[in-house]
Image 1 (cartoon, each protein chain N blue to C red):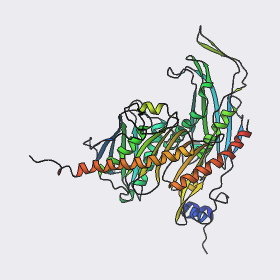
Image 2: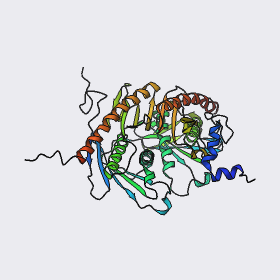
Image 3: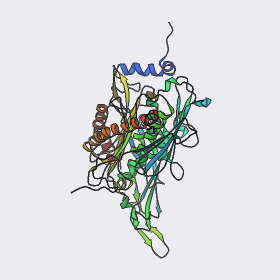
Image 4: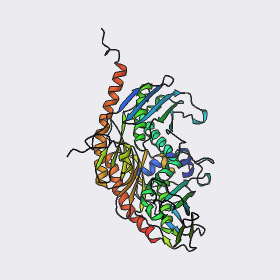
Length: 229
Length: 275
């Protein structure tokens, strides 16, 4: 029997190929749009630029993150997203190269499907930082996994699949260390399930990093691939 | 000879101050190892005007939780599901690190994580009075009176102890003619809790050329804590109920889950002993 997921995928561990757009905004220093299926986030980066006096740090850049939901006002969930993204960026940006400056990132949800949006926001922000030429220690990538009501591990769930989930896990890994860059798990799950989610997410993140690389190669090497006729 | 007294030293060189404790594997507050916890003290029922309340102390951290039950209309999508609305407040009076005014990013993110955990802990269908018409909504206000670290751990502990202490009227009657609910004046029925989540926070510190876990860092110790992770474990079943944090090697993450599971059992007994 072939398993059929709500959006037509045939395997629980299948990652939808992410859709990326680089530099969709002309006025930002760097910008990117990242989408898993219909969930998408548009990120913009401004900086390193001048910093408000009260935010000035003598030995590093100040990193500010602003997350906006698709509709309505931002609430506590958006603050948690901002904190998660900021903590990732503070460890990944070479902020000591730019003392007394600020690096601002804006993430706007392009579609609202709860937890997936955090993964999209992290990935869009990293792409936007690369687009802006801000120095990074490593490329971090994020994926979302769920444990569904029949205790099956489902990678990159759709919005309908998230609704019935027993637990939702957002994992972020980088391509240099073996550390977990960030982990936000909610719901009820066992330690064994957690470990399997961990392993699946780690390998899925590697394929997202390959997408980053392809996206950047398309930008940098775009001139060479044009056919002359 | 010029000597710095410890308080001045701590103020001028906070990182060096804590590093010297770390080198000896002890803590400024008298704990004898990096992996020892401050034992929480739980008092319940101290606020008589609430349906349930709890006061929790973890070292110098003091947090108060009060729960007020009100009646609301359920959402159309889930007509039997009640609500728990929790809010964590770290007012300016609890620590000099918090400014008066709107809650900051830290406070709001603690609020959101506590809310996401409690939603899977409470039997929401048990809060139904009349499907599609009336359900209980439990407003839980969690206020820190003094803050010395362990925000997530103490807030969740206070909330769960207060929920265990919560009593609802034994009889409720929904009147379809005028859409009102009449409740008996006694408060005797406890609410059903499916889980007893206990949060344990660890810091990751650099010591002896490697990284290791520091259990339950105080606010002062944040100076040397590189990153942190909070692991929420159900004290009843031993299942995990949330992991929040980052920048932690896999082996330390695994260790934190094992240690958090042990601690959840111990803390679960303390909460279980409260009424």
